[in-house]
Length: 330
Image (cartoon, rainbow, N blue to C red; front, side, top):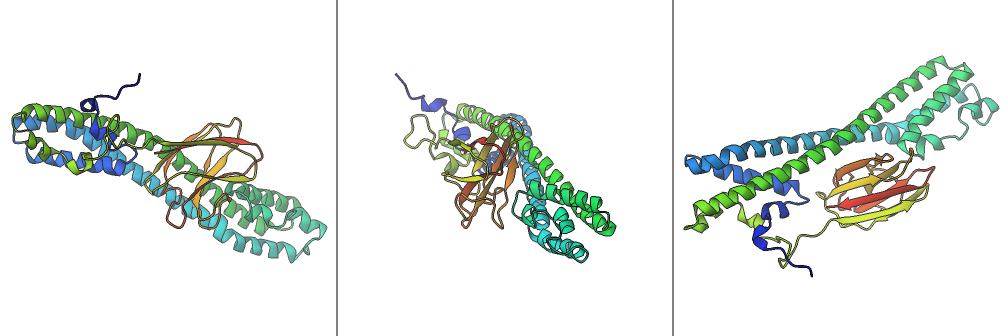
């Protein structure tokens, strides 16, 4: 028979900050400041000194996560500018140079642009970069466009460099998110310990304990037998065929934290992003991230582009193989 946990054994600080580092940092900062304000008392100083070190680490890790996330978002914008906004104009220039020598649909022109603009404009960013590289090889084989080869090669180098740097930042975001969550747990454990010591110190004047905490954040659901337990993480998973999109039926806010996993073997990737359209591939203005086979990524919904006008969480499989995915929303 299941029994409810005794509520006094529940760490209310940890429970009430699950899934929200904004709330966690606010609560921890408030406690640090209130301890500092009274650390002329030797008993309070003994609490504040070890807590402050743990709190400072949490604050710095949160700042680092925000910095890495901001850099990644900037790189994503740069990549979109290159491969979504600027590439069509560049492609028209490249086509013009080739077709001034080889008319459109001539055998020579078809060898250089066998699929017209489709590989450059209607595929994933990885495929677009690959198409630019293929164009370089075709131009080199033709031998009649050395100046154009230099231009296209320069564009390819810039796009590939931006994409590589963006993917490196994606890895750093995942690492930083893990560290941030680990440190949140440590800070909340320290706060729980301080709470017990303050109850002991002020056991004959128990209301004084409230001076050291933002009680408005704690007078909420404490879970495990309370009337309003915190909501459980939302877990979604599925299998997606090539060139197919699906909308995840998740309830999101900008601060929602998503743990995204690609359970596929080999090299099959998928893209995840928030969009104005349901069950669609990336649209203009969307900010998809690519999740490699076997990888786990942690992102906030805001980093995936969530907003009131982009409320739908979509997953797109660019192919060529079936992909197995899961998303946990906290």
